[in-house]
Image (tube, rainbow, N blue to C red; front, side, top):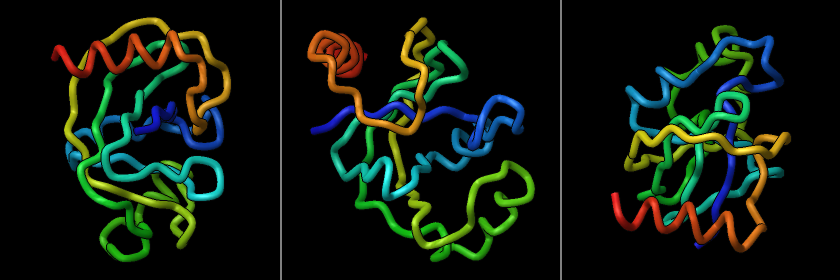
Length: 124
C-alpha cells in the first residue's frame, strides 16, 4: 500500500476547488505519470496545508475519459480530461489536520507520516 497526497486545486491554488465534486462522487482523481495510485492505496486530500480527508482506493483506477459525464471538469476545475487523468472509487473519511508538504500529487515517503496516516485510517 502506498500513501499519496492530492490537492484540490489542480494546477495551483488559483484554480477552483474540486473537493465537493470528488467527495459527492466518492472518487479520487490523479494524474498517471505523477501519481499512479492503485487499489488499496491511501490518499490524503488537501487544501493547502490542511488535510480535509483520507480516502482509501477501492478499485483499480481508470482513465477519466471512460466517463464522458466527467468532461466538464476541464472547464470547471482545470483538470485535464485526457487518458492520463485517472479516477477511482474511494472510501472517504473526513479528518482535518495540518500537513506541511508543498507539492501536491505525489507519493508520501516519510515513514513517520505514513505511520500516522495509516493509524488514523485504521482507527477511523
